[in-house]
Length: 520
Image 1: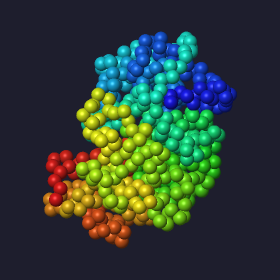
Image 2: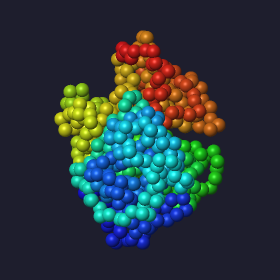
Image 3: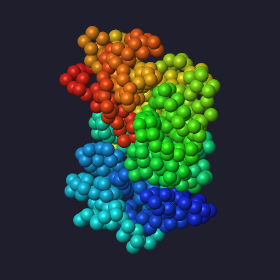
Image 4: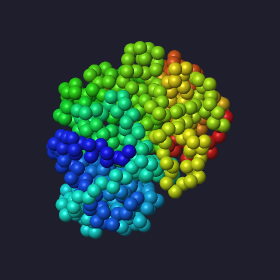
């Protein structure tokens, strides 16, 4: 398969259908395809060779979609940049990947100028904004206007599609190498569940640089739906877009769902969300209380969960809509991560990679056509992650007798207190069922006696109140005593990644800055 395959189909079959809606403008497939072919021609004219890396640093926009199609069309490799990173991290990733061309939008043109000065391999920066082109940069629209369309190289199969950097908060980012087959397979998995079909109006609210959104982009181009684009995520912006664009499908992280519900409750505006038919969620586990609350508000929407990681392109397991029912809520399976995706194998193993009995917590490992090619220029890390032909996720979980997978925690985030393993996700679920709690994050903090103790950081719902003692008493009713938080901290916000994951490294930092981690 090749990533531009879907676009070719709709250029032939449905050229006048709407491909993109962005900031009041509609773009047909014919218009979009012409711009992609011309942008690819521009890249070829700038001496982009087969396999060269072309990066984009931008908020969500129609041009990001063009970039994702035009770069492989020109036989090159995409390298979408995480705009939440520091300049140093971004420049490191560009140099590490030996990227030669960077495309920037209005919001990142100053950083683009810095890249031109400091990056070792970037030789050209293309300005994809609507203002005056900064000195030393080429203009995106001018390049499209003067360039002739070129034939698609149809780069595909197991050839390198993109380098998707992951990490950057605890050390140098790693470049995950994904093939066309890797990403196309994950997209087809979504389609197999009836998602992203013809007639879908999908709202891109997650950042487009993130692989979860890129997989949705790929699936939507396969089926020929419409891409509605929100430049950056805000709760108000998402709800207004659903109302105005009659969005019927969206992908969100649980923290984003939380923000939508909180904003709606706080502002009481009667924005119409009845068009929404499917909410996909992932990036982190969702608490039962939050899922129940979302189902009560988005009454016309089904829910579907995807579990995975960048190295898995990104889907490993799915919990389709049919499992979000009263039956599966009652037996607890609605709160699982689902079962292995089509053609994917999952095992739960111990430290020696031996499969553990059902119901026993171990490391989740994955094998299938979704597994990455490896880490860019990191053969040792690749060999460690892919030992035995299985991707070792670093996630702790267990599988029940029916094959449903339950995520407990990142193994490195597990709290070990007095020799007992405490999985933060289980504690967060207990805290989240308290009626005053909007969101929580659980970490381990140093303790001379026990090695670590459980600490909870909590955001309360607007107008709600709770005390340290009330939270602890509530948890004692639901989980074992050694899992109950020993300390509670109330905050207004939590540090989040660009896709809504809580940055627990930031929460732990003040507690562990001058300490060695010792487990009792």
